[in-house]
Image (tube, rainbow, N blue to C red):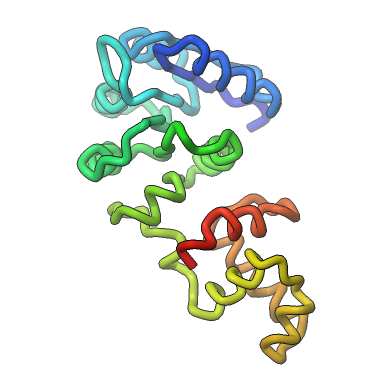
Length: 208
């Protein structure tokens, strides 16, 4: 999908423009902007975007209400919810509505980039903080998916150890460590860029 249609809805103009400008930099140009929930609902019905990025708190309709109404119409748009709230009830409600992504507004734009990439590929992506702190049906914490060995390797990666140093520490081949790294990247649904794993490991080192 070269240039998917993406709707962004937020009642804060600066935040709305900030997300749009960021997505433009990532070469997403087919963007639709909406200043409130009612406008977002109508724009989704009219234009049927592949993804809608919705603020959870908006005038007229919340992001979750928009997702619910579109779900009732059985339109194919996938949803990413943006929220300041890390509330278990709201997160479970989003999960029940089959929302594809849920991010906290405090998350970096890089996490929005990863989330959008996953959602466009038909996957789900919940903020790493939410995934670590909450039990979400169908969205297990990515750290829980790792084996004890993979967690130990991640700790070493977070401490800036190279694959060769890790291999020497474990008495295995560098190739074996690289295979573990590849498996970890796949389980965490990270981009395949050279720095994605070390960035994630450092950011989440307190949970390892």
